[in-house]
Image (cartoon, rainbow, N blue to C red; front, side, top):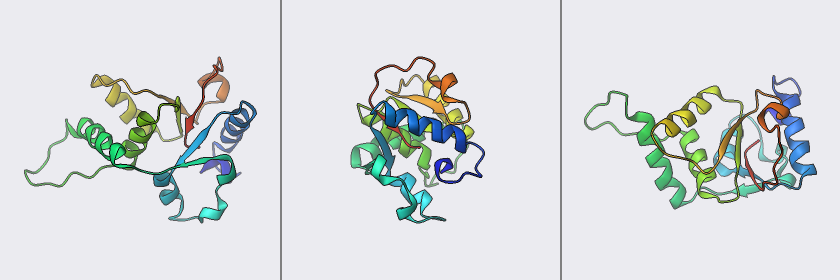
Length: 153
């Protein structure tokens, strides 16, 4: 999580996004999936949970994540009985897409952004936009509309 480590490449951008969202009183969500990823090397008490709403992974998210994964796998060869692995990116996208007040999904992961574009090219129109943490907030949100909701930090 770039926000918590000043040595991370996109720490300054993460700090600017967080400040903007807090100043604008936008609701920010953190998925239980992202928390699990963080807890591989960090501890939950290190997360700025006082500023974020926790978004649990639900059955409706699982169904949509399956559909997103099908899009991601459609051009890859597979074995007849091969079990499909559902990547965390598609799970996070499903959560953002299901939650009506999430307008932006913020991430520094270029592979995640490519997957998002692949989902759009398949004809699906997610309810949220991908915002790259690699870009300053002025480039991602040049006009700051009165939106409520953001997914992840």
